[in-house]
Image 1 (cartoon, rainbow, N blue to C red):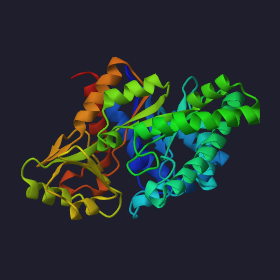
Image 2 (tube, rainbow, N blue to C red; image 1 turned 90 degrees about the vertical axis):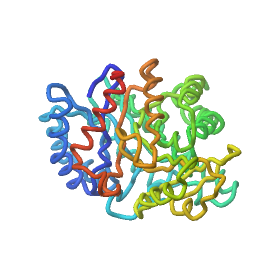
Image 3 (cartoon, helix red, strand yellow; image 1 turned 180 degrees about the vertical axis):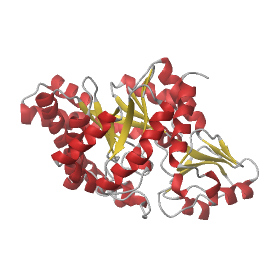
Image 4 (spheres, helix red, strand yellow; image 1 turned 135 degrees about the horizontal axis):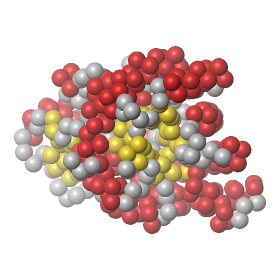
Amino acid sequence: MITPFGHLTYCSNIHPGEKWADHFKALRDTLPYIKGQLAPDQPFGLGLRVANEASIELTRPEVLLEFKNWLDENDIYVFVINGFPYGGFHNVVVKDNVHTPDWTTTDRLEYTIRLFNILAELLPEGMHGGVSTPPLSYRLWWKSDADKYQATREATHHVLQLLDELIDIENETGKYLHLDIEPEPDGLLDNISDFITWYNQTLLPEGTIYLSEKHGFEPSEARGLILRHIQLCYDICHAAVGYEDPAELVEDLNANGIKVGRIQVSSALKVNFSSEKEIKLKAIETFDEPVYLHQVVARNADHSFIHYPDLNEALADWKENQEEWRVHFHVPLFIDSYGVLDSTQGDIVKTLALHCENPFSSYLEVETYTWGVLPEDMQKPIGESIVREIEWVKKILNHE
């Protein structure tokens, strides 16, 4: 939906399924209720998730036309696509497979190109559109610094091949599209600071040479095209898990001219071990589930950090000198505490306050996808849950 602070939506990765028929059924079953509650008299935007198998089906002209007609009939528009999870994302063990295939492969490149071709067909006139994507690869797959360096180079080359496609799409159709790269704990781009460093030290210099040699662009023109089409997906949960300060991040992004394709409004779990340590360990243990990665960043008393690939490893290694944990678990936005546990809701409030003061993206996307693996007492009907999330964000934006 349209707000004074940009288009606000939710990401449909909340719905299970890999086939287009499953995606479409979930949207038909849920979206009319959500729109009726939130935007009955205005168009409602959707952050669409399309799995790889579904993307192949959706490229068939008759299938895409059916979907476009349904969107028009229901006054719904698509302007962003979530291209992070390639395959199954619910009811299967996801863990680090969420990064598979990564950007070192042509499978990831081809899938992402398909998503952009779909988005070019769906995007309303006068809007730009983005596809979110993983942070190049999963860092723990690469054992040495040399391996990580090589993986980063290969991934960057494929990102630049995608850039060619985005330039061509805009030249041929007039549709302005951008890749929104999403840093995540234990990604090759672990956090937004890593993303900025990669952008300046690898993407821009290699991209400038690539575009100059392949197309004859002047360096300044090549740089402008990279900054236009390769952007950041700012996931508030991920930044909070990395203890990144929102004000510093926004300042650094602005100083480097890097655009934010979308803000993903999401919240993580936070454990303050200043009191009731054993009780809190028991409480956080209930969130240790087998489907998703729940990376933990522990802050020690000396302000050093320990990174754990998953919650079970953090639980097994807990130490008395650990003052706080940030846990990558996308909990509901509108709840600031879970008994003795806290959330990083405060980081959402800070980030959105910065955005309201000086908007740094046109798009805001609620991305709470863990409803199905939350403790039972926190689970609610999906439609109702999404409505509550978006209404809470609207109140924060409106300073209510």
